[in-house]
Amino acid sequence: MSTAVSTAVATSADGTSIAYERHGTGRPLVLIGGAFNDRSTGNALAAALAPDVATVTVDRRGRGASGYRPDHDPAREVEDVAAVIAAVGGEADLFGHSSGAVLAIECVLAGLPVRRLAVYEPPFVVTDDRPRAIDLFGRLSALVALQRRDEAVALFLTEAALVPAEFVDGMRADAATWDLMTGLAHTLPHDSALFAPDQGVRGAERYPGITVPTLAVAGGASPAWLQAGAAWVAEQVPGARHVVLPGADHGVLGAPADLATVVREFLA
Figure 1 (cartoon, rainbow, N blue to C red):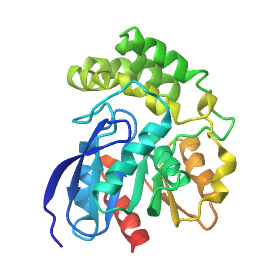
Figure 2: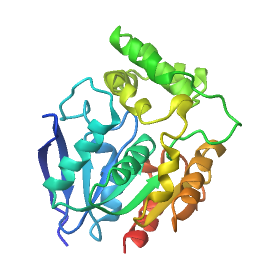
Figure 3: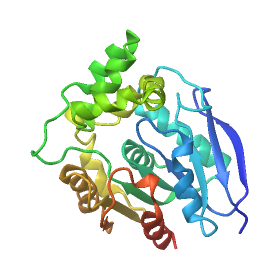
Figure 4: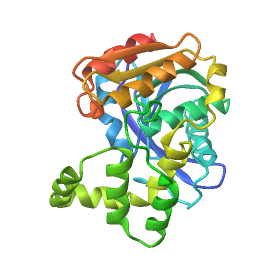
């Protein structure tokens, strides 16, 4: 199978341009990244899946080469994915990482033409063993509106991802990384809008209605609350498969060999 890469743009329902890259030919697997990610984040997984799986990496709105409109309704991002699926053949498998996993689930719930769904650690808070990010969407939106990008990134990291404050200070010291993150600060309200208040599950009662084959994956080295989110999805979706990758953590896309093996087997 060819592993040639082609770059293109799909037009979403509200006119926003959504950039994507198609790797290889055949039935596509659309890769949806989480916070602070653009389509380049999926390149390592795309390479690990080649040549057995044709992949499509996507710039979510406001990232990379995609356009942006400050409409935080998750339905707009579902429409973005729908436009990409239509552009690459009209039907696809989906893989989502972190908040991208939540978006992938929303796409299935919205009835998009998805054959199979794979998610990695949707960051739902489904246990009581961690602090909850109170009104995260509202506070992020306010900071972004005031162009306080540095504060918005720090808020998301410390309260949504539970990164210790001293680690955030260390990230600030890496100017290139911090500039990349603050450059995407305006997209953080989009990530937080995918969740119910306090980072819970929006419309949890809908999940048992998912009928497509589903795979929920977590890393054995990830925090317990992230592993619990993946396990919860597997419990709610009828027939879903739950896999824990020993030694993997939330940064699995940086070293995706084991994840690629599991996803490849699931798609086959």
